[in-house]
Amino acid sequence: MKIRVGFGYDVHKLVQGRELWLGGIKIEHSEGLLGHSDADVLIHAICDALLGAANLRDIGYHFPDTAHEYENIDSKILLKKTMMLLRDAGYELGNIDATVAAERPKLNPHIPRMKQVLASVMGTEEDNISIKATTTEKLGFTGRQEGMAAYATVLITKISDVP
Image 1 (cartoon, helix red, strand yellow):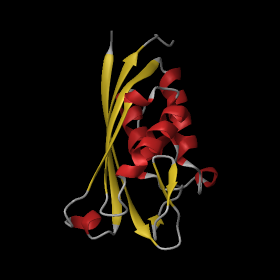
Image 2 (image 1 turned 90 degrees about the horizontal axis):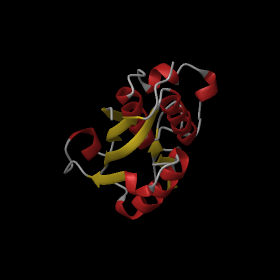
Image 3 (image 1 turned 180 degrees about the vertical axis):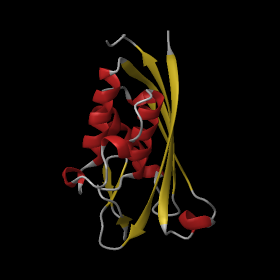
């Protein structure tokens, strides 16, 4: 069995006047993440990890922030397309281990819903998705509540040889 590992990272600035989308769900907060899409840092980190594991470049290559069709797009659509690319290349998801770094809002109460939504979008079991939340103890841009960061590691398995 051929297995591969990928790592993804994303960061977005927090600003007034934007909704906060994280892990595919809307979270009530006074600020949202700024980006060309809905700026869901968790989904973007997962997409990058999946694409990297399959040696399919990165999220910016497939979904450039200069392309009008991706402006304000729901990142769940990008994740679904990423899973199609992964499966078209003959791979299947093993598991995801992800961490979101943010001071506020508290994310732990939202993690079960995030896992449920992501599993549905990705066509996998919730047990294959681990999401953790942490603060940076008020250090750095996340600690100053200027933005959020997300990290993701994935394991994928080659299930078929694609010509």
